[in-house]
Figure 1 (cartoon, rainbow, N blue to C red):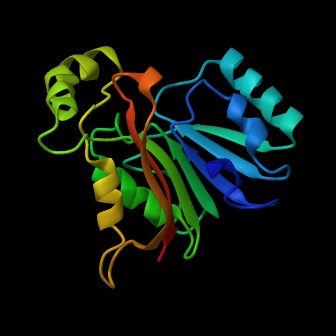
Figure 2: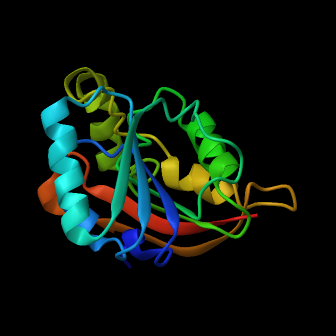
Length: 191
């Protein structure tokens, strides 16, 4: 499933960790308003290129410098949130997930793709744990062995869970993306 098409025309979508790889903006439904946040300052050339890509796709784009753990938006602002390979790099990923839930309106989807912690006791997990300090240093705080998928699933548990359901969920491997080839994607629905 394409997480960029979670909400339709006229929707207000928050894309967390928008970064500089903006080719995916053409995957949003024309007429979507996308607010892209990233913790790093974007230079004027990158911002104008991003707006040009968005305009060509028929998407309105606002770029905001902000921390995912402290989003500068009121509660229930967005019709959907999209996040791809971002929860590995924030300092407090559980707080970031809480913030994502806070800015989603009730019933709205959060589509995510993340690399995740390998199975307990596996050789892959041993490799992730050995390499993790270097990965954090060399790849902008990227943590190889975070159990992000398990944390997101936990957020659907009980009557007080942040999300009412995990609409879709799949774990998979992308071997050419070593050392982050253990991955998962899903769509959560805000309670």
